Image (cartoon, rainbow, N blue to C red; front, side, top):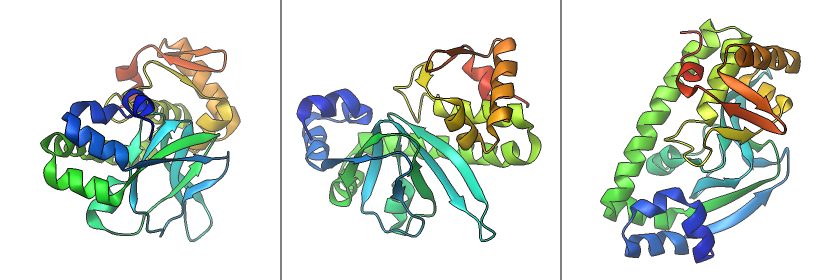
Length: 223
């Protein structure tokens, strides 16, 4: 991976000492996916830790009855799949591109070397795993207890999580169809939810996307 691009887009590498950062850079390759393309199928054995350089992915699965279930959106600067690498098991979820998306793949050999040798890298993994644990526990409440507006609010809050996706900031380019897909609701429900949240001063719809005005309220909406 080009050194300048690596330094600009791989945020966690900035926490590593120079020699570890270079080891990581040499282990990264880039791949692009068209909208609707499968990045990972459930059951795949993928020997890489994957980061979203630019674009938007959806993490989910399809039940035996054929129902599609969305667990989380993965915007730019998110890295995912460390659990499967650490446990050396097939992927448990499908990952699909919602738009044209560029991804970075840190090969298993580089990931394992960093895991076994880098204190800074291990601290990063602990932060990510802890944050994901809280996220997925909250998703159980989200699915069982929240109405359409609550589901949209929580799904959007995950996209703006400063630990998991630190480069998103307070604005994200996203459309209503993508929001509906990530929240597991219809597009009319997503539209109504966005109007409700804007009226409450939690976010603001802007041309081509939206801006979060109060991430804490968005994250705990409906609690």
